Amino acid sequence: MPSDADLLRIRQLPCWRGLPDISPLAGGMSNRNYRVRDGDGLHVARLGEEAPHHGIERWHELAMSRAAQAAGLSPEVEHAEPGVVVMRYIEGRTLTPSDLRDPGILPAVAALIRRCHQELGTHWSGPVRTFCPFQTVRDYAAALRSKSSPWSDRLDELTALNDRLQRSLPPAEPVFAHNDLLAGNLLDDGRRLWLIDWDYAARGGALFDLANLATNNGFGPVEEAGLLSAYFGSPAGGATLHQLRTLRVASLLRETLWSMVSELHPAVAFDYAGYTRTQLRRLEAELVRFHGGGC
Image (cartoon, rainbow, N blue to C red; front, side, top):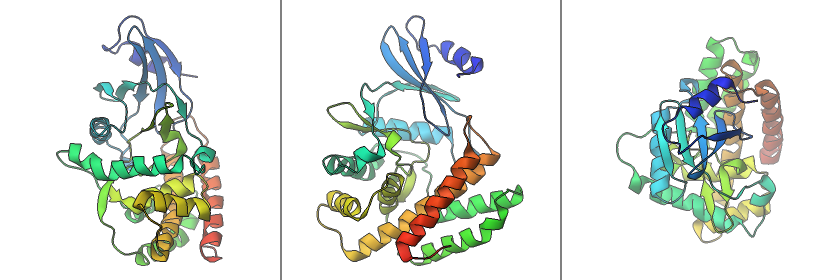
């Protein structure tokens, strides 16, 4: 149920034409999202506080959203003030993991991600955050140790895995990356795809974005090969495929510790502890797939 405080905050925004009709949108583990209808049509209001424990700075998210709008990747930002962003509502459907495994849609998804990596920076000016999944895991682990997390007994093995993964990879050329490629962050309006939710966007690795997409949406070997071929324009070699699969493990490791930290700093009403257990199981399964072992 939406909180009275959220509803009041949205109603009091100066951007509406007439009395806004507000309804909550499902999903979202870092923000509270609402669909709003007013005299100008449909909008999305996103409410979220600063989240330094996740490296989320709302000024940076807003700047990324506006750069993505300018690049034609994301809908228009219509209003913004501390803690609230209002964007144009996209009439269409949110993609699902099974959609993203469809070989018919994969080229369009790969093209959208490639445009993000190649074009977002041309619409950016000023300071920009950087994102490294391996350093993020180290930061999370330090925070969890300082807060006596219930998962503290797992941190040594998880950070050791993190270090092994990083050592096995070559340095990556940074691009403007999304870093949170869940199916729910891709919309289809029937004519084109849109990419939304720029909380974690930063200068990062292109291949991490692809690995993040692959692991979040249950890609198998066929989908992995199709994604790399569509993104690079030709079949990828074995070294690139191995790096992708290494980064799939890194992506799940980051998501697991993200959830552990979120247990200590819940942003919305959500079973973060249950999510942590699910991510640990997924991480173990990914490791078995990767090299037949455990942590």
